[in-house]
Image: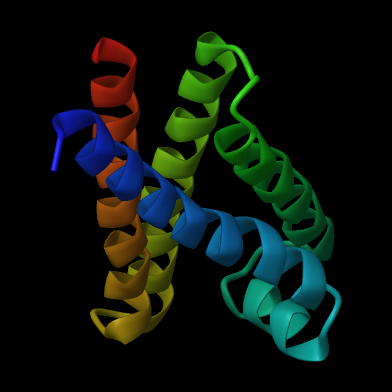
Length: 124
């Protein structure tokens, strides 16, 4: 397998996971009672959850659409980096060290692999 093919597969698998988890699922579930309860549980106002969903969906689209300029993709990667870090911190501050505190860091790992493979593809 060539390096370009390996990085293409890595990029699309990891970016696809980010797209589904941060773009599709929030868009479909953001107005459910469970989602609203989750935002309230963390101490954030309801409008924060709505704004977060808008930016998540936009960021996911930026990552998945190939024709988006590289500089904008960099901002989307940075935004998701902060989203995952602060989600982990928020859950840790409210609930202590549990699965909800660690779960965003799994997606941070996918994001890092997506970012790395994206740059490797641009280099090849």
